[in-house]
Length: 292
Image (cartoon, rainbow, N blue to C red):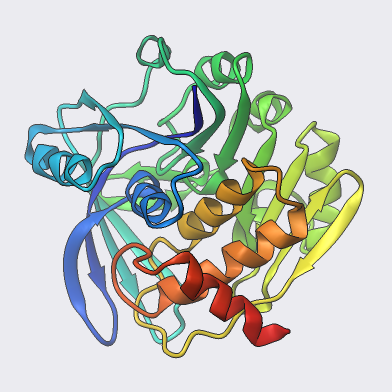
């Protein structure tokens, strides 16, 4: 049994910012796999992904650095174009190709304590798949993909059609300040957390950009500060990096506040360069100490 299994598509990403244009692999699965691999391996990790033949080289690179990967075949690999302005919290996005959704059949044989579903598009994971995984372990979901629908090449905001059916099978839910207003009638993150908890979510994690993050669990709120990066180079994958740090801590029984601060410090380091987190746990601890 693995401690954490992340399920999600590896993508082709084209990143366009005022400071750089770069092509690289991406997706929740990619950022989490690399992030987990940079942390101490006392937490075991398994990646399940699905790509076209054109991305098999990227899978071999992951395996080459010691990441445990199960890869299923898709007709295409997801291709995202992410364009940022000076405000790194704002992103324009297009999808130039879509991968096949994951299936319940592909989940047979998986065995983990925590299953993190890194949704990128609304049809990545069916309700039946979520129910199946919730019968085996803790289900962690990143909301982002459930709110994205592709029409042509444009990513269009959509409502989470099966939200009321999925949330009772969700233990940990991560969302940001924009997503919380898309799935609830509230703009106050405290009210959002209460509402999602009423559906059965045990840990609600809301990232608020430069305003830090908020965690609600076991009837208590935890206000997590934002750590200031030395410079902002690339925000792509920051939410996934937060989930990486948070789940790495929580899988070991580390408390909510400490897990949130660790995740926030990891994000600050990720912001400072393009690509996935590439630091060490010592780097993260050093950032955390800046608020002591």
